[in-house]
Length: 258
Length: 335
Image (cartoon, rainbow over all chains, first blue to last red; front, side, top):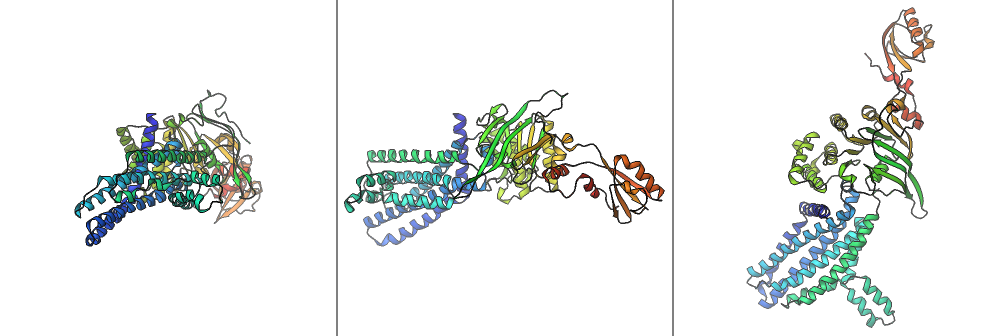
């Protein structure tokens, strides 16, 4: 067990190092510029208004940058290794495909955590430096964003185990976009009553509801997200991540590397 | 066809078989709409003995890399059995004691060679100090000690090949799989790899390496396995495979014309400047030398002509323009 964990962590550490050296974290510079410009421009507005807008911009940027990393780095995690054949010497070592796959996931998850952490710190500092209160309630929105990003990575890896990086990126973006509008599917019952309820239910069940991870507006108004809600959100995310990672792992294990 | 899968001669004690494949098969899917299957490996029965260097020789597409990929778990065989270091293929126990260099290795270009070896060492569960020491040793062994801290994106193809070789040795393996290890190397690099393979054998290690450079196989191997179209054509000691007995001799003579009496005993006569190169069967040597001297000529040199692996390869695979005897025509220099 110790060996398994240590090999998985070795892959995760190397994946994190890769993202750092491939300058993935440079997006933080854009984030810092965005917040500085927003902070300067919003000085003209009333205190309550600009605080909400600043939080809105900060949280939306975290979500957007995080999603871009999760999709485009996530799809490359496996497919790039296969296309470049860099995993050949590794899989010949006492490293199982499962350890490799989970290590890759854990490595990118850590990158996203560091990225979100740095952006959150930047947002809190901006609030402080512009005379507003750095609100810990923000964490209630950032944590679900991280959960959504982890699920996005799981999908990106699943698709990249099955197809090319480009197609995997298209599929992942599709799932995320559809998932963000999953409530619309549920609303079809009212809008189009002719559609069989079973079909609507089935569609709703197979699409992860990414809007479950969106507490940005609530938090921007200064409302805290209840712990119970966060707990359920975490369980929902964990269930989806386990299923999607499991499917991806099964696909990766079944693959021939020609 | 020579086929001696058990390897050692009858008077030798049988050596341990570190790799055994039985009826190993693999085919690839072809076509998108109407799907068929193209056999890549057919009923491969191969044995590698402890302490030997076995050359795995074949033309492009003959199934060499497919074999390696199956053994390394990168491809799933359609059928057959494999035992490596006493363990079944699926077991990971043997991987702790084996090393693998893929063909044209791509190593993470954002890492330095030291970092990459450290990463590989972690996968084998080596401690930090051991990894550091091992990386230093190996980089020195493959001649990369001065480039240890340069990102591998700045490495040449030959340097990458050397780094790839170092990673294959990181766990001090007892069985080494090298897929085209000389590929992309300059003469110095080729010599280095050759010496390294020989050093591994001296240390009691076993090496299975594939190559299409037949002279490398001739120089290094105890036994050679020849693959054609996914089938094992022959396997055995090089001498047995090539029938190394001298059957022809090459004479370089001067002062005599090709049509001189008695020279018809030569299988072939070819003018090289003002000299004549004669290919002679061993039994006719005396007659030809006498004929040269009788015609007022002089014998400048006699050289035995042996069948090379290349001759064997082309003869067995067909389409060879020349056999051993004819190939001997290039053995002499102009001076």
